Image (cartoon, rainbow over all chains, first blue to last red; front, side, top):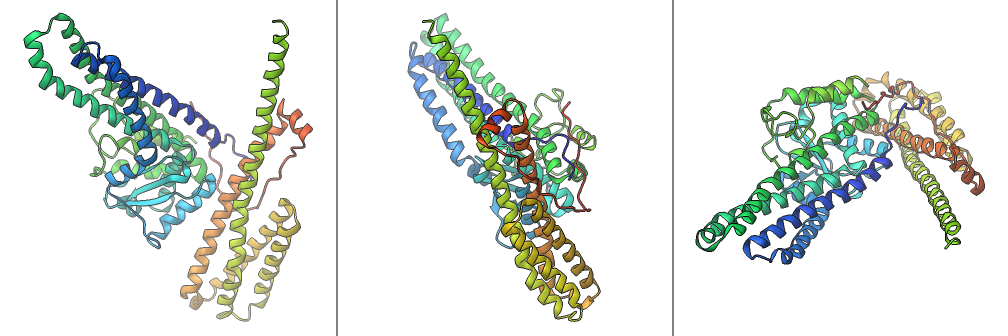
Length: 306
Length: 187
């Protein structure tokens, strides 16, 4: 057997992701503390400090909850059901075989009954991982293409991308929820008070709060997108190394790109988890910055260059 | 105060050596775990063979020589597993694989046999197991390569020599159908 020129060491990727997880949780906790502080100041001057433990608590709870139950949440939201024994033997077989090649236990397999071809993996580590594929993926792809996609998803499992993505997804959701709630309460409560007895000082704090409430979800989303896009190239490369057959994955990408159908069960929060952008939304003027996935043409080009 | 400086230096060196040592232990452990994966699949292949032979016999009883050679190769593989090195084992398993290719070629000549559900299931199972052996082997060899590289690199090699970490053998089975390794570059 010829030695591969460059082996992507799964253990190095795991170590890198461990640091990434710590950094992400820290950043999100900081954002939550800032939000909490400003909210406290708006509603009771000097009350900002009191909100900090509350923000810390919220961040801790949502991070813990997403760590342990986020995968079930995501699977339920995507209306995925677990594959019954004996159902889709070829799919199960591919998952088992490729898992051996990565040295991970085979993840649980879920099916989403939707004809749009797509897939995602989730969980907190390889022992608690699930992989979900759509009916369309199984029906429309041939064996080598399916192997390519599954290998890509299993690489996400093997190098602990799934944990990072899971935490990011749920934490971004928490921040979006919180700032949404803040904006609403300003609209109802803030306006009346400002009219009656507020001086200039309170107004500035309120403006800062509104600015924060608008900006934080955007920043959080940008972090999420940056994290997810760079992961995709890496998973394509390690997936191709696993199957030893890059054209399989490239051909799957081509088929999925040609398929114009959007995946109905996917939403903005879960889009970045998928193998390819499930929303099929039109490219915008801010091309690149707000995309959940790298352009498929570029992914194919890199695979063909291997 | 001055006595602290050599103490700190010694402490740093000790921590460094301990972490290197632990890294070697972890890597060796990974090689062993990966070996267990191959072992499971090889045993699964042995288990499939008697049934496969019985099924084929029902339709092609006079192909005695083919059955004989598969049975012998299987016995040799089992013996090699008990006493042999990975290299000897790989040789025996390669020979078994070749005998099985022969058996399947013989079975091709019997259309009736091809229609039997049990034969189809067994062939499918065998093919699947051989796929899994290939992947388990790849994972094992990758781990061996990482470990062997580590114990040969400076400064880990000094530690490896002192504490008796020796190079592990690759598990090589020649397989003409094996796919080329793609080149990966990150630019």
